[in-house]
Length: 137
Image (cartoon, rainbow, N blue to C red; front, side):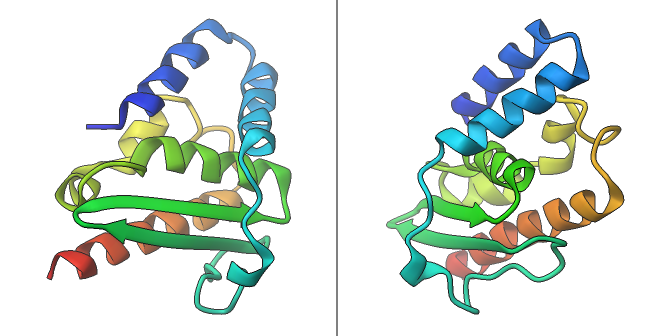
């Protein structure tokens, strides 16, 4: 149950046979994402559990979930961009229903991320899910 923007990325990945090409694709996704306003890089938006500096600014309008993010590591910016394509513009109940690990596994990320990056990715997903769940109650 991924957002349609994520399905586009899955299709793009199917055409990229080499993991290095996929890695570059993820980095390019991060580079094309707008930077998070410096005023939003505060302790409340910082994600603990990531090896690099990561900030997620989540906003909920009505029942629609959106977030912006940033990191000081290019690959992590790319992972944030992937998560944005997976979750942005879903309603709150859809965010809770997304199996992010399974969706990202469709890209083959599990085998190619270091354990530190995987832990950071899980921390970002947890923040997203917890925030969406909290907004539903």
